[in-house]
Image (cartoon, rainbow, N blue to C red; front, side, top):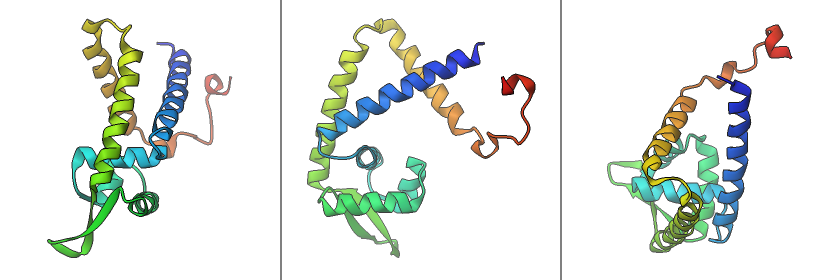
Length: 156
């Protein structure tokens, strides 16, 4: 396995995906982080801040700032949790659902055009490979990625 070639292609994919997502969400009037937040709330339904932060794999303070901006824009609402009066439930407003529909429409059209050259019989495999990669990356311990001593191979 050529790890450096894999890393090179993964970086290329990351850059292309990030540029594409930024462009497609900007035309919908939201930032990339706001877009991800709307999508998560749309997929999961109402969540509290801790659950949302866990799903997004971000710290609560980052998600809280994003929620503040989405509440200010009228796309998300905060409601008291009937089961825990100290907790707040976050949910999409009607405007938030409409915005999410626009985001899905733009993204779906983009990826349909992008993937039209992938043979249909390989689409399931491509999706499976992306799922395996995402699952594998989520299990990596990033705290130990830079050891203080490197092997000679790693230094070159």
